Amino acid sequence: MSTAPVAPNPYPASFDVDYPDRKLNRLTSFFRILVIIPIAIILGLVAGGTLQWGDTSGQGWRVALDAGGILFLPLVLMILFRKKYPKWWFDWNLNLSRFIYRVTTYFALLRDEYPSTDEEQAVHLELVYPDARNQLGRGWPLIKWFLAIPHWIVLFFLGIAALVCMFISWWAILFTGRYPKGLFDFVVGVFRWGFRVQAYSVILITDKYPPFSLQP
Image (cartoon, rainbow, N blue to C red; front, side, top):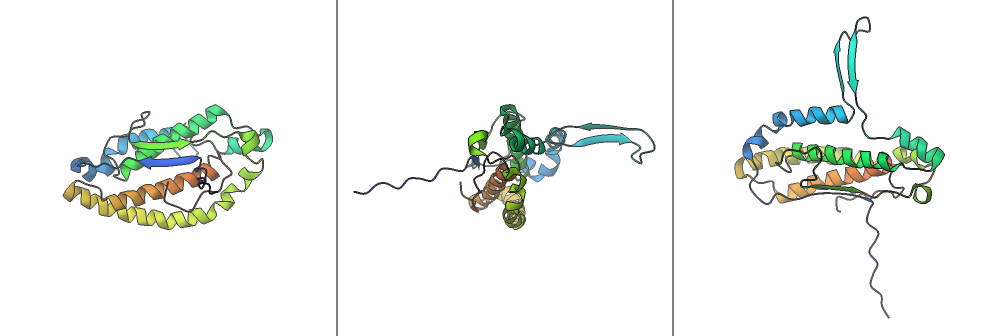
């Protein structure tokens, strides 16, 4: 008697972008580095940017505006001492990550819809809320950054390759109006890989080691 193979559990962090099977806007693609500035400023303020003016020498006056980004150190302490992952902290990290990747996807020319601050659009990013008491090891947040180093090394070189793909695709869009499907899948795969590593070592939603893979 044979039994069907059991599919492995999917990784608790997923990322995907709908392929634009249509003509992309050549004008906004050409000037992408300029048209992204307004939403990039908003993202910078929300995700931890600092706006300051005045004398920065320390002798005069200075006014600064800061905003928090991805919650990390508070989560390390909360998991370490309380074995808890507050739901509203999870929601903040999830929704900020979605916003970050919508802007990043737009900058990478993968889509031409202007990034929304709250709507999902064509960028699909999900995290599974963890049962911190039963699924997260108390001391793991202290060493995950170290365990993730091999991933960051590989992602450094993949990131360079992705930038080359974006540059080639920029020319392709200008001449054909389309993003080459193979290059699109590669860039999305690099983003997916990086997001899973971020979910493991920074957002801390899982102790499951991320795969070395571009695939979903």
